[in-house]
Amino acid sequence: MRNRRSLLALTVALALPVFAPAANSPVLLPEGTELRTFEGEPGAIRLFSEDTGISAMVTPSFGGRILFYGIEGENLLWLPTRRGAGGALESGGYQLDLGPESRGFPPRPTLSSGQYRSNFPRDFTVDVHSLPDPLLGVRLGKEVVIDPESGDLGLSQTITNVSPREVSFCHRDRTLLHPHGYLIIPVNKKSRFKNDWAVRQDGPTGFVYAEDTPESEDLEVRRGMLFAKAAHPPMQIGLDSDAGWVAYAWRHYLYVKYFPHYETGNYSESGCTVTASWNDRFLELNVLSPEIKLKPGESYRFPEFWKIVELKDDVASMKEARKAAKEVPRSPFGK
Image 1 (cartoon, rainbow, N blue to C red):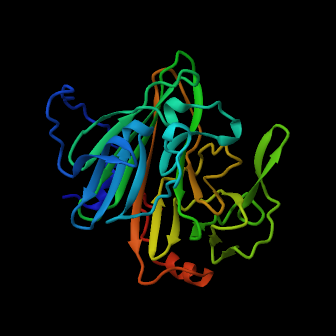
Image 2: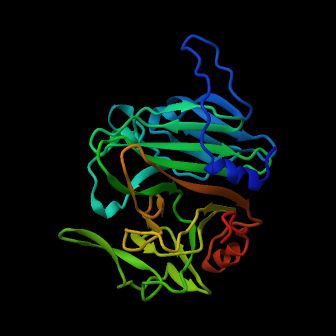
């Protein structure tokens, strides 16, 4: 069994090579893992904590996405209720993408929805990685591990340059969550933004996160925290938060995402470390790493740590969201 400290160590550890059985051989999976079909995707890998009832579902056949993270049958991640052309599942759940978004990269189906390869480095762990993207010259990988005692999830996300030239990207974690919950993000006491947050503004050559923030009854900054109800009207915001965590209160659950913050990092999305957009269908929560230049063959790893906190009551107001913010445990990254 693992405690939180050992789980975090696994999050940033290198995946070990394992034996891959032949197609007709019986698959003997490590403890805490099993194969299932999920949302029509065959070969989905379930990581589970029997002690807590928390599980995660990783789908190598659909971009290596995490399509389920929740307790028993309650999925905290958002999935579409309809399918696209040919019955294909629309984007949903969590996916590692390339950033900054404002650079306007071309479509990258190999990375976003293509077939990923998978292996099982150890118990309660799966490693998935993409084929090389033919245009951008990179491969994406994720090592996902669940703590059997707590159900906490550790992610080690990797961008690898497989091209003959230098490339420059940041990690962009895109996590889709159910709407009508309350987003909680600590603001930076020394924020570059006048009101501690910014709103996306489109221009002729792209977009930026600008300081001209509109007034909204569904968003407030209070006691060093931004609180926003993710519903109508749609909005897309960015923050240069340095706390290393964000949280989302939905029903009586508090979903917390932890990540490292680097004071001298090159946060190239207008200085943002977190961006979020919402509408009546879903909330998209993005965590950004600093941008890094990678020479041929180099990799850049960025860890995250997910946690579910069960609250006594549903969160249905700003006041209750402020109360829920007090339930966020201290970051395992030391902030």
